[in-house]
Image (spheres, rainbow, N blue to C red):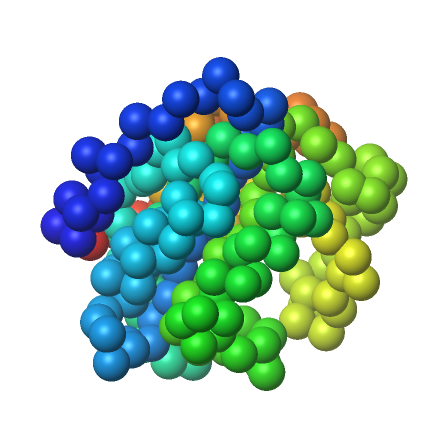
Amino acid sequence: MPQDRFTSEIQPNLTEFRSTGLIAAGGNLTLTKGTPAQTIVEAINFLHRDGVAVTAVSRFFDTPCFPAEAGPDYVNAAIAVATNLTAHDLLTVLHGIENRFGRRREQRWGMRTLDLDLIALDDTVLPDPGTVRRWIEIPPADQIRHTPPDLILPHPRLQDRAFVLVPLMDIAPQWRHPVLGKTIATMYAALPEHERAAVTPA
């Protein structure tokens, strides 16, 4: 498996870090350097170089493209990190790594070489609980037409996405959503069975 290339390196000294972040990684376009799985491995190595300590990485999973038939299927994973960065600064690091691998934000939910989504940073709520809940409750039909103007934490679609929750079950099943009050394991169990089953180990 491609993740064998970095698991031996995940032994950081955590005493110097204040916060724990959860990141969802994915991609479905092959670069000249390699497959989507190899791209995720290289992105994780860049996280180490950018002052973020990677503490855990899930298995890699194959996930049907969303929306259906919009392109090749995805490879998805979840990453836990330790950091002293603020949420906004950590997001800047993630966007910088995406750019290294040719990510272009031209189409929402379109095909991409690499997607690094900041899912959570400890129990941080941004910008406030009411705003987070409003974005969580936006009807599915409206999701594709509306994008939050600012960073929302936890990620407002976290509880809806099997391709995020299935990998997170590997590394953070007991993390609790600070607005919904539900753990990763509880949100995972609430997903329809066919959605969980569609996310399979790579």
